[in-house]
Length: 554
Image (cartoon, rainbow, N blue to C red; front, side, top):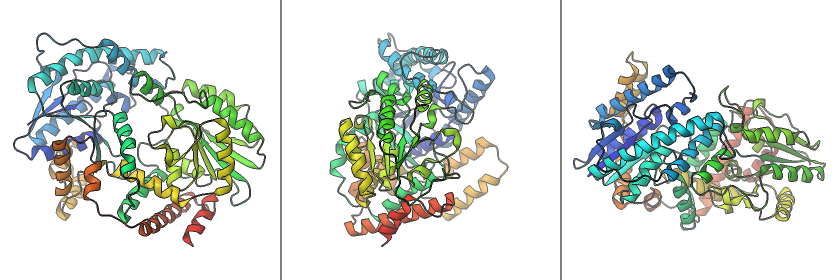
């Protein structure tokens, strides 16, 4: 069968390598004909690969050209290593006449990157945002005809691309859907403990994937985890604490210096960045941007200030999302962050503002919290994984089932839940349920692509790193030497043959069951191991979480 892979961002080698290993599996079937559709400098001016490398839209042409050169080089070496056809977008001959393109739809899609890359909280873009928007819009209109022509000419049975929320990939996905061609999105694993060996595969857009996963969750939520699954889930938290992965939390190296294990209640408040929510809304991805409880996070913070003023013996720590500020001397402060700074000046005396430049890790706050208040970020899920009560006012924006946290429907409920949870403390059952979801979404949806390498090959990989070969040759050899286990190969081929939306069904069909008592024991052991890791990293002798660890240890 014909397979088209749209590969526009090969400069991002981690994603490109994972994509190559997936194609290597499909290449093993002689009847499969793979067409590797690459940019090869067709897209002009700016792209997501440049943004990922922190190159601004107004950067000198030499910087952009260097990225294009590396992208083209990687595309060539991938197709050479796999012995598949490399086709540039420029080579595609337009079919006559090209079908009409919905320009208003392309404009909405182009807003996604424009808003995210400039941290905007509205459709009113900055000068930089408008420059990005115009380039993406113009490139999309050119690209649309090319993609339509290629799909109509080759009539593929399967299509693959990377993150389908981004405009060019989304355009490809939508054109495939119109023709009834299943299009799968290739992404880095959500579990950051193995980003270079596993990939996340799903059909259509990320929002489609999350929505369908939440809908199907009741079928799997009562299945106990085995020891291996618990360890995989908690390894994600271990990696976050060590500052790994694409995360906004630093490695734990500094603490707030609070006194622990006393009667004072510690409430940590985690804010979210608005740009991703707004980008999803304006580009038509379907997320809600406003809550029924509070108009926005500014109103929520004002409410917390009033609540905190009545709880003199409680301490509140408010943490703005680091993404809204300048990170690693790159980017710019968001409009929302500027508004927050003004409001913070009116905080009560028992409220601490933990700014990103203070170097405090998110997990230092979590381990010293009695309760976590959050809007819609994943920190609520991470708190639940640790057994810490996490309360949100905005369940409609969550990318996981609201039942995994505590969702308030109004201000009265929010007040009630905070007071109630302050008295009840941490809960192992909460941790179990959150870990089951993480296993379902992170592990069951991913597949290991480089897990069947012999001792000889592992030795070759280590040797390869130290050999004086050029980067291109090393990367080509990486693809040639990597090998995927037969079980994972079967899962991938079966998923594509069945047209499943993800690997989740096949994962649970093949796994061995575990009994509930073993699951509880394994979760307790893993939470103790996580806490031990935390104390080593932080140098703390005690913190709030220690009381919970002592309880479950007994």
